[in-house]
Amino acid sequence: MSEKIIKSSDRVKDIGEVFTPKKTVNFMLDQLEIKEKINSLTATFLEPSAGEGAFLVEILRRKLKYAKTQSSSVEEMQNNYLQVLSTLYGIELMEDNIEMLVMNMNNVFRDMYFNTFKAEDQNLKILKSAQTIISANMSQGDALTRKTATGKPIIFSEWKPVGKNKVQRTEYTFDSIVEGGGPLGSVQKQYEQMNLFAEDNSESNDENVRHYLPVKWEDIYKRLVE
Ligand SMILES: C[S@@+](CC[C@H](N)C(=O)[O-])C[C@H]1O[C@@H](n2cnc3c(N)ncnc32)[C@H](O)[C@@H]1O
Image (cartoon, rainbow, N blue to C red; front, side, top):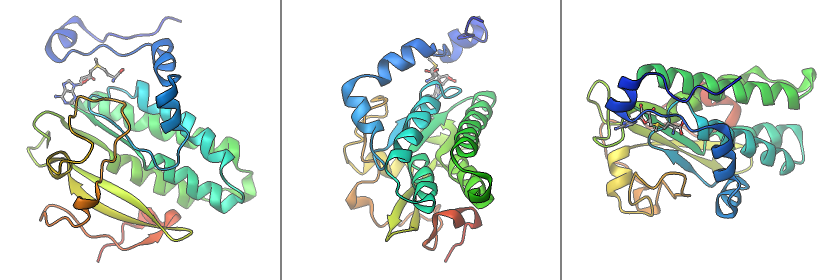
C-alpha cells in the first residue's frame, strides 16, 4: 500500500503539511551522528513540527531497542524504557495531527512493552506512566510563537534520573528553554541532539510551572506535586 504523505492541497499550502516517507525517515536516522544519539539513554530530541510522528515514532522504536540492550534486570529495563521515552519531545500545530502523534507514540511503546516483557513481569503502572510522559512531551502549539492553541506558553518537562530508580520531573516554559541560550539555539534545528535543559535553567521561577516530587519511574502517572 502506498504511503499517504499529503492530506489535502489546502493543508500543504496553508501549513506546509507533507509527511516524510518511511524510507526517508530511515535514511536520515541511519546517519552516524543521529545513530549515536539514538544509542543513548539520555540524548534528547525535539521535533518542532512533528506531524503524526514520522520521526519521533521511529526514534522511539530504535531507542527502546537500545534500552533493552542496556538493562540487566526486568526493573531496570522497564525504567530504561520510560527513560528513553522521556527524552522525546514534539510540538505540532494541528489538533488531528497531535492526536495521531500521541496515539502512535503510545501504540509503539505499548507494542514493544508487551513484546518484551513476559506476562508475569508486566506492570500496568509503567504503561500509565508512559501515557503521562507522552502527553507531557507532545505539545499542541505553535513552535514559532511558543504558545499553545489557547495562547498559553508551551511547557515541557525535564525528566531527570535520581539515584537508581527515581526521577525528578521539572517543568519549563519552551520560551525559557529557547531564551536560556543553551545549545538549543534555534527551533529550526530539527533532529539535532540538544541539551534542552541546560544547567542554567535548573531553577525555573515561572509561575506557569508546577513543582513535582521525585518518584519512582513507575509512579510518574501519579503526578505528585509539592
Ligand atoms: C512538512 S510537515 C512534517 C511533519 C513531520 N515532521 C514529518 O516529517 O512527517 C510539517 C508539520 O508542521 C506542522 N506545523 C506547521 N507550522 C507549524 C508551527 N508553526 N508550529 C508547529 N507545527 C507546525 C504542520 O501541521 C505539519 O504537520
